[in-house]
Length: 376
Ligand SMILES: Cc1ncc(COP(=O)(O)O)c(C=O)c1O
Image (cartoon, rainbow, N blue to C red; front, side, top):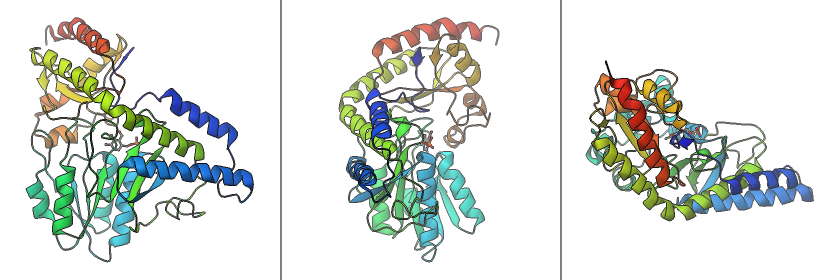
């Protein structure tokens, strides 16, 4: 099998799985129980929480464990909007966010919040001037993703943070689901940051929201008051320990993985540049693990299925939209034609991708795709 759909999900690292199993088997007490067995679980949980905070890269932060990127985005955005609505009701985001951000903003619009959606250029990047112009006295939250999941465009998070600090009192949230462990990140001027474990060889159903200390949020989940009242429900000690392990491995491996990812991406770029049927979608400045291209004469689905028959796995523009047949809002925002969008596919690499797999992918593409073009 050649798995090139790592932006949809990654294979859990064996050490992450074994730490999850070990904690589940040996320390299954409820951290809220006051007996010694509960206290042992509580101390493991607290240690994992501290490690995740440090590994997040968000200065002076604390983490809230969640079920993944979607929940963390909901908590960051709704939690901030409701907590700060007395100060203003203006919010800013971009047109190319993941649905777990965009849909939340649409909900908030229905509740009377006003949202500015920043446009992007052909490369899928916002303009800092547009951001500056959009900031207002009543802006309470800005949410900008770090790396786009469909085309890999990288947003100028560091510059955006500086502008937000300088020209407003707004909070700054970044969905860093596709960035963590893949490229050097800068969260110096970020207040809230979303991560999802299964995107960097962790487990599904596990993620976190890193929150700068001192910020108030309205909880999404109320109940027993766990996690400082911000996310009620018996805490998942094994999940927290496994997430800390996945973060540590991803951050340690990042420097080593980066050159291989870049080499694999360059090999793919060089190959596609010489294929007459292919047009590039991702810009040359995209993240090292995502490459989107289009074959305007075919549909993305046809390409995905043809490769799938050869045990090669890529996807149409994103995993969440691939079954709904919805036109990609990201490619639309970048100005691609309907035809280009229909033919788009995403190849996404994993931290442990091997060069031989890319060579094999190239060989299989040459065998499988040209015959499909005959007669179209
Ligand atoms: C950029 C981005 N944000 C958020 C999510 C949602 O994460 P999860 O699947 O953990 O809910 C994804 C998943 O594809 C994503 O790519």
